[in-house]
Length: 125
Image 1 (cartoon, rainbow, N blue to C red):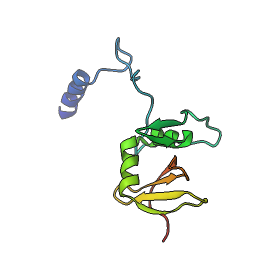
Image 2: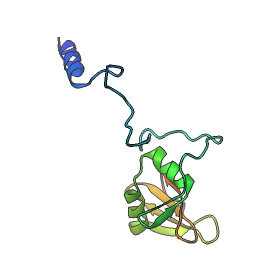
Image 3: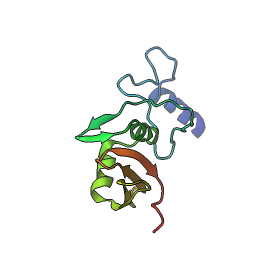
Image 4: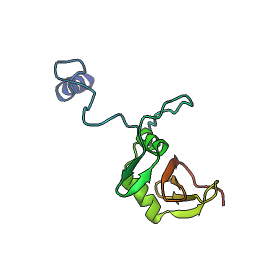
């Protein structure tokens, strides 16, 4: 009987997709992934976002795509840049910031432009 009750409650609380007026699309926002369910990146995938300046900081197209794929907000990136451990990036003039709390790396170019965001452990010391 417990399963039937849960099913009835679910029907009342959560409308079924396809019913009149019910949609999975939020017209005010685009798709976004999350830390647990990241969008997959394919080498042939087109860039979805244009480079933009957010809160005074430049973000590359790639960085905005990765943020969208991983459900990361600009405030999270700013936190990494303010509190993260800094090390040289793999290219001249670049810096890599690592936040061990969020396990997130942010790679910044020579002029402070965010190039990419990488989840996971920091670089080897």
